[in-house]
Image 1 (tube, rainbow, N blue to C red):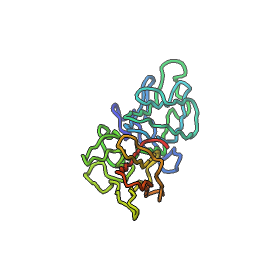
Image 2 (image 1 turned 30 degrees about the vertical axis):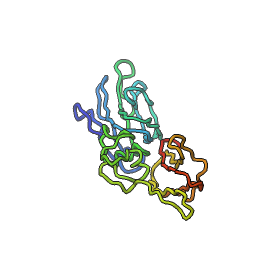
Image 3 (image 1 turned 90 degrees about the horizontal axis):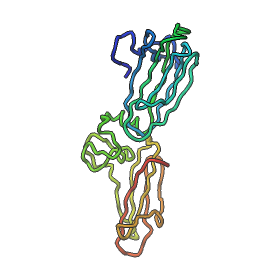
Image 4 (image 1 turned 45 degrees about the vertical axis):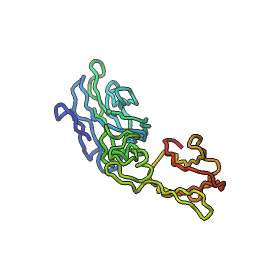
Length: 244
């Protein structure tokens, strides 16, 4: 994750002398004026990127976080460990942590002439696709890399595997003693930022949640019943979206 091109002296590296967690942290490489040291993370959102940052440098030497070449934040001078949480928007993004030294006044090294990043973590959908080993080009929530008719968003919500064909996460639909439709579905207890809705219809055009009863809704299981007892044809489906 921390390897970058260029001379080894310019690369970020892991060390244990200056840390926030008391274990280790990434430190920027040694630089001449006008040079920079950086490392990249390629993430597919939505999700959150969290980390602790520290800078000890001249006022015109900066720690900068870019997203797709736009600024997310920067710090300079003497800044002790500070926690940052960045929202990762939907889609594929490149985040670059860069320590850069400017030419000109103030270029005399001050402090430790370095920046540090510690306890870097990713949560939400962005973390899940990395943990599952999904390549960024296949990590769109609506892609279906394994071809099992469950897109990545559904695999995430229903505790499926995005890279192997598996029909087990599909919701089960049964009828109760009165003939009413009942949908039962396992949920991913670690999935964040999702809304799951069970909708019903009699005409396959207008889907509604009114007229349903939630029988169970806990961290890993959802069961919903259609309350219609008219005997007319009825249909039931699961809707999953980000938000909520």
